[in-house]
Length: 114
Image 1: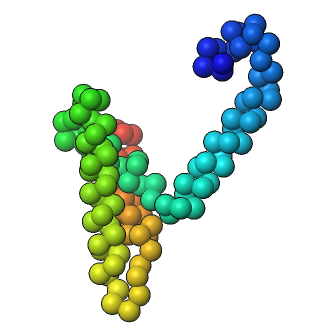
Image 2 (image 1 turned 120 degrees about the vertical axis):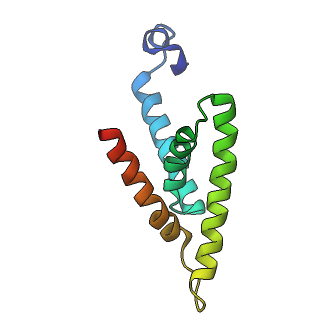
């Protein structure tokens, strides 16, 4: 109902303030659960699409599956690096993705600022 627009939802008698609060709370809960289960690997989702666009993938029919495959491959590579980096203990994968993704993300920000 909210996807129809604010005016249409009001005309149908939907209490907007209530459903907006419910949707914000539900979205926050789902994001919290997914981060708790998957870990802090947000750089993969931020950096991979930009890298693929720089490689020339602009058609979204190709870019979306390409991002899924490249993101999975990058995360697999980060997991292998995290397991092999320390012999005595396993490094958290979020540390590896942040270490590899932060310089690329900073470079993208600086490039966009020009």
